[in-house]
Length: 310
Image (cartoon, rainbow, N blue to C red; front, side):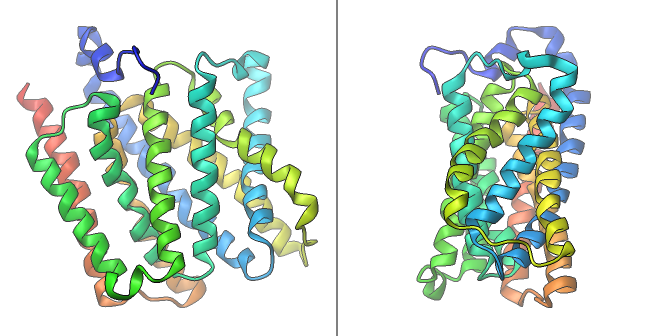
């Protein structure tokens, strides 16, 4: 993050009125995060269906271009061109680059792994956020939450099963995708107190749309039928909705509280994976996912009890 800037947590401590409002704001952030991540399984299922017949770049382009179009259509009439104004263009560009890398790798991996397995591995991102919130956001994470982070990563190892998993390129892509998404979330939390949520949501898709639009003519397949067209259109709509809800959630609550709530995505991914693709997670995947979810819940509860004690 830019040197010399005060962290969000430090700025909050300077305003007692903000502290009194943190309870309702944190609850709103939790609800928004749950709603946002509930959308992701549907978007991922559409991506996996399309990946069987279309280039990955074209799928990711539809995701970002659709997102950008929806956000511009919603916010330009209300806020004008000023919605594109940011005080920190480098951070916004970094956010956009991280979400592009994360999405590309995730959708590439989705073509080869079940939805629930991909979601479980991807859930290491909130654990990474909890760890990185200390050096990058100046937040305080006690030894109990550090222990929960380590236990969560152990759960991820149960899902991956390193003896065979790490030799699978799809697993490595998912791990790198999780790291990129964690950095995106950290940047989102940092920029949340400086730029409007609408601005952040637009910039999330800006770089991906520009880069992939330039590459699209070299790797494009015409949609085969109306269903595929609908799936391509749904990617952008669902992506923009999930992104905006997530950004608002990070503006209202601390990263170490909000990020672990991504476990809600595991439920939808397991259900859609079974209903649409016939993939039912094996016992180790369920056990590992349960450990990850339990770690996330514990982290959120420790944060809540820490606030009550102060």
